[in-house]
Image (cartoon, rainbow, N blue to C red):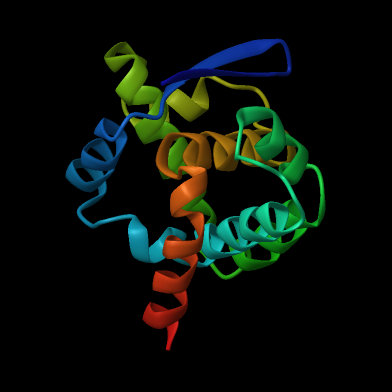
Length: 150
């Protein structure tokens, strides 16, 4: 799925298909899942709550609504435990997956005067959830994450 993020008058295309995971691993030398697990857990937990409250299915619109509520605050708190470069690396991997001509991470990020994480992170998290979690698998994924954390 191609997603376009717009900020500061600039557009960045992200390809959120599974290919970005391989781009990330090949470029940075490790799998991203352990780094993203706390954030995925808070987002999936919020989706599970949304489903329990009567939402019939998870849609891009319902995920965006979710990202504007307490979920994004919780994700930001969990993000504080991560290295900031991890977020940039995820974003770069998705952007590179969409357009190989963007160059390496340093060149890519140096091409921006500003890079407002408060605008970019909700869009990035939404893209990850939209491309990787179906509504019928949310409960199963949440239970699996709880078992892993124990």
